[in-house]
Length: 57
Image (cartoon, rainbow, N blue to C red; front, top):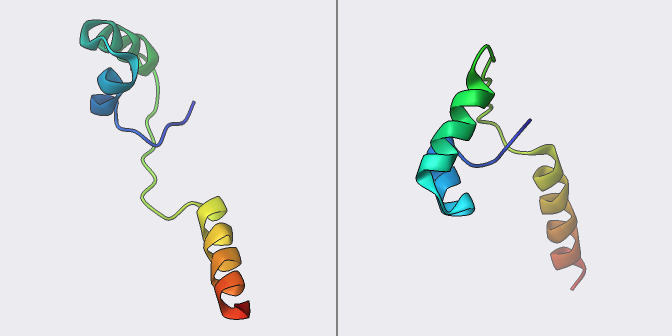
């Protein structure tokens, strides 16, 4: 499972902080959490496309 939101931001998405706390508790039990801080490969490619399009106009 992956998300671009931190667990603290999930309550805003799902609208119920208590339910989110229960979901996160069950998800992370016996799990390994890996936090990636680098730019997304998809966004890097999109940035190149936008830059190339701007140079042609």
